[in-house]
Image 1 (cartoon, one colour):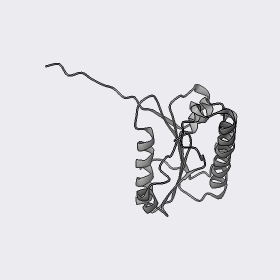
Image 2: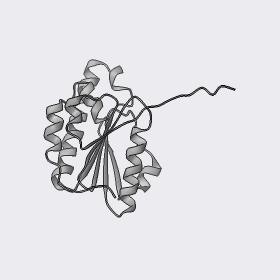
Image 3: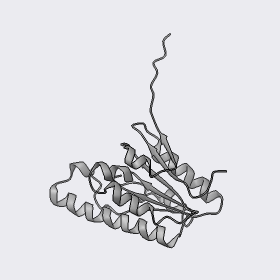
Image 4: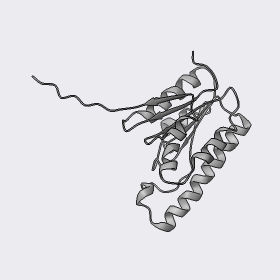
Length: 167
């Protein structure tokens, strides 16, 4: 059993960060606890899936972005609109933290918001400061710097390795 109230980061170039976080969500839900997942920069994400809807009410997934295109490919006006939508998602995360409505909050691809200069490390730090003592938080993303690392109790680096088998 893990210590409660941990802030974890799943980061790295490899595939599997979001699925690992989803695995933790399922474990938490199996213990009769609630999970909130907020996805950022994921295009369509998981929110439209019929399967995901069946996970409710224990696991609720939210996505505030409207575009299904990659954020980096959006035109200036559409990008500004998506930044407003993303900021709404961050405000919702703050509400979840303030109300303590879940045992586990997953901020999927929140580190990408720092890469895209939508969120500063200081803003992330302020958001995390609202965390109730017993709530766990998982943040995912590719890039990670030392200023973000110090905000977490544990950092997991995900790396995809390919081996060529010689015969």
